[in-house]
Length: 114
Image (cartoon, one colour):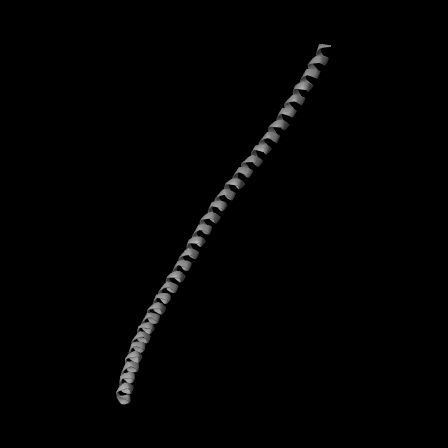
């Protein structure tokens, strides 16, 4: 009986060992699938980061171009304002000269009438 009990126990242990080996093989397979999935997700993430960086760079480039365009417009407006100021100064000088001439003419007319 004890030999039969030992054989039965050995068979039971053998069965448990086979179950554990099957379980370990399934776990190893799952680990490999998870590694592959992780690698895939890592590649996807890197791709997204790369795409995101290029999108950010493109957006910044567009903003820089807009700012440059605005700056150019401001410079043109400043130039235009400077030209207008110079024109106004010249007109003021002309007006001053005309007023002086008129005043001189009026004084001359007044002297002539005396």
